[in-house]
Length: 306
Length: 306
Image (tube, rainbow over all chains, first blue to last red):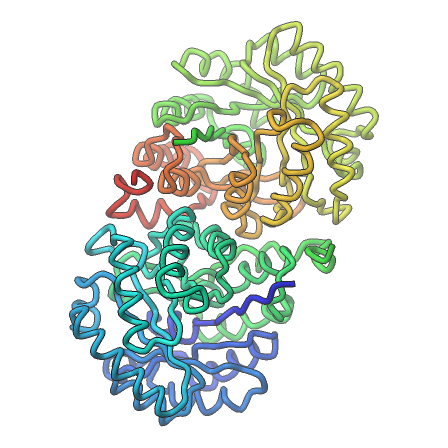
């Protein structure tokens, strides 16, 4: 059975767009329960200035807490070198920086041109390298941008190469805006892998904005993607990309992968219980997902085992 | 560009499970507007006894109405030979009979064993043949059953062969219960095509019960499926299969296929307008779909055109 890593990004990508701040204790309960359900990587937060995202102000405490959980890979987002220093101090296992393929979005989101971002990535790579921390670059708006529209694939390939040259150990392709379609996913994964090497592009970060999230995930799997970001209950989005809502739903993704016979290590029944923690802590927030309502299939335990 | 036929089944599969009966005028407005949006096939109803499904009692009138719309293929479901006679009298372009791969479900749903169903299919094939009407058999619960659980693939293959021998011009595989996963879709499509011939299995009928609908559709496309059933707003389900809700959403499917560069012939902006007719006529019924909320992408007109 092929192993697929599900990287839970809800505590970061989900919570950064909620109005209500989830209390630290609830975040800890969520992370603990999800790790116990078998999720092996969690992005616990982001080292952005607390004044910008008060929802994630407790990221350093969460890193310390999550690192004590057995077998969990604890990752965090960093917007820049300052954040990378804080992430390294907190002792993350891995850090990643988003690099928007749309320069308009990059300037709007982090006030940096592409050239300035490459300089920042070089600096973050140095900080991560000095601390022996895994470092990834997330190529955001890679499938289209709500400000620029189409993002040329050649540009993504060129910037992917630049990010690797600047020190990225690994890349992910992010459909920040929910623009991707499966044919595009296949094409772009193939092109970027061809440019930077098979092993450098492992991850897709998908949103379910137009309902295509799992179809895009399938397309990625067929091109050798082995890590999929997802968010419990599909919460999340990008506050700077209007209309970009909801990551793919961890529960539905796990149902799909486990049914297909992939090894995710995740116990779906336990995972479904984790929703209660999130729902209780964020009563105003809609939780997405179909499997939670429908329940497991009668033959779930034998699916994909043939 | 590969042409994909989208077969709108909402007026049948959707409306058979609504509590409120949609008025005939609203059904006509729906069918007309969807045909004008470019949908080339609509299952307008079912020739079941009106006492069983009063929601579909006006199917013959709808057939007459829809046949006057230019370029529309007008199909209806028939549960048995009696229904086939009525469908032929009404002058449908095509009729299909559901044949449940789960004998338990078959007995519960239409009170017939598999052997009795084969006899019925033979009779319906004769009626359709005499009237020169296209005749398809829908292999329902092909991916699993809410009563029996797993449905062995060898059984589906064997019954597919029996349905063709009994006179089916074409088969569809139906995920009546929302059990299918993409790996299973690929496997089963391949096996059935190998058994009955590539050209006999053209269609998938999918539900989005666990959110995998479009991923399953993609899996089918990759195995040469050229017709996909879908329901506007994802309404519908099987009243005899508890927990089996909602067909895949026509709007999201069209967004996916058009974005990928398939030729569906459907104008998505016009299609999105059709929701208003359904929403107004069925105010209590939830409408599903993500694209209607998110809207088209900025680059929609150029996607898939490269």
